[in-house]
Image (cartoon, rainbow, N blue to C red; front, side, top):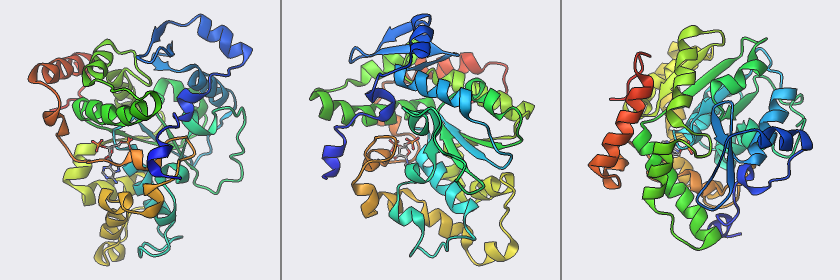
Length: 333
Ligand code: A3P
């Protein structure tokens, strides 16, 4: 199938609105908003979701129990999730798979299939996905805020890695991403102003951005579950240092010998945007969460918002985030 054809398929978390009676009862009591295509979003535990995702979250909250050595990668969509998935997979499994750029699973599969989303993939239309057979440490990903994840992790010291990115680049990245989907599905354009208005109002899937970031930042200070708080911009600026920080946190620090022999650099090269986006597997095909592999790779880097947002839009977004984060110790400069 052509990669461009794959973009016609909406993601799993939007696609199918078949929900249980229990979920139906729940969502009828929740605050709701229409998105730009007329689909309804519901606010569950402080974040906005399509009905399918609410159902998946209920499935997850009822049935998922973390193992002590599970690793959960959390992020707001478009914050560098794909990169974090690839890096974590490569770091954790570096003794199992050679990082010699010949036979590594990341060369033949998309990062989203190797580290699957809980609420946007595994638990969609599946009350109890079989996760027991997965080898330890199991790697999962989520776009849920910490408070929604929390109960399922409570009895386990499993680790959470959160990656965040400047809201302005997140917004522009999301606009490009949704534009591709909407253009193919509905054959119409998706104005940037609409994404901007959604971000200012807060009602968009997995939003509001600033509430989610704060939920993980607070947790990274409290430490009831170990949370490593990472920033996309720091990963771009100092990738070696950030990958070593990730490995330290996950309890698999790089040895001196590995550092000397260039293992860190090999992992970074393997997981680089240039390398991943040029692989055949990522130019075609659809991930298990229902999104074309190619849609996860675009330009990358820091500051693309300057090419799209007006100064006034940028100021409003910065002010909104600053207001939410006031007093927390977290700042986006
Ligand atoms: P842009 O749209 O700004 O280019 P997510 O993975 O959370 O969906 O985020 C997607 C963003 O991360 C996109 O940003 C994409 O280009 C960028 N990205 C994807 N893979 C990357 C990688 N290996 N290294 C750096 N950035 C990457």
